[in-house]
Image (tube, rainbow, N blue to C red; front, side):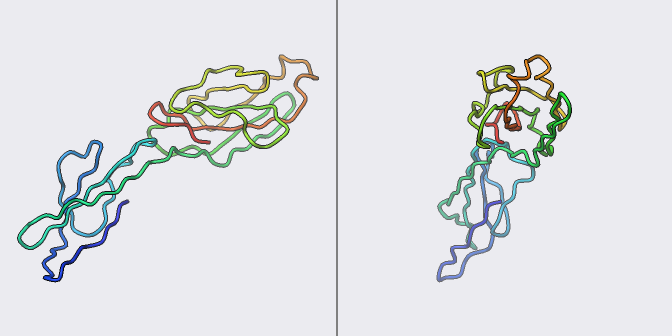
Length: 178
């Protein structure tokens, strides 16, 4: 939502009527009463928008437009949990509620800290598989869980260690967000 204040001049000829234009994609000026605007539909994550507003007086003269810009941050995945079971790890998370989310990227890192070392490239689906000796990327097209059974193929000594799981929402039109 965008809000603004009136620019009442000493003559008091403000009508409380404004016109606005949202770009990109807003097109022509639209009339609105009041000092706020909320788009009727969700804006795309990862995009930047500008709203321009003009005030009208009693003679329908329009002020010079004022403007404000907003960047819609990508959705964050919440409540990521990893539970260990014999020979597998179950990773779960809360779904991101937005139509543009196409799936999730799961990253497993062998690390001694709880800070992710690897982050996905903005706007592109990372290669699935091993990134390096310590990091593996998986893709989940839908749902909110993933079962990791990777260590069944490795020697127990290689599999031993501490692992950090990160889950990123993915849509082709946005940067990924943990």
